[in-house]
Image (cartoon, rainbow, N blue to C red):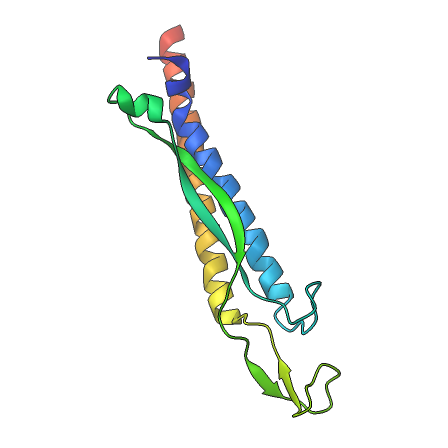
Length: 144
């Protein structure tokens, strides 16, 4: 077995942890800006989400070997959903009718997404730990 194949499971788990860490950071940013009516873009904050993609090794697929090599965060995109409008005539960002455009962040959804990302991170961490323990046991047997 080639050496990179020995470390493949660890690399896949590490890529999953890296992607989920970025996802948790983006979700935390969404939660922090849930009431921000002004952003760097000039309008209210727009919810962001992370787009994942699989990492494939096409050269391995040609030889009938598993081609999956992990996951990566491709980009962070803004949610195009409609911004809710709230009637607050005294607000500095209110329009002529007294309505304020608020961020399209829904805290219950963000909390569920955060828990999901944390559990996915933990699953990748557990897989990485198991992989390390299996390699340690293999080395003990080889020294044997």
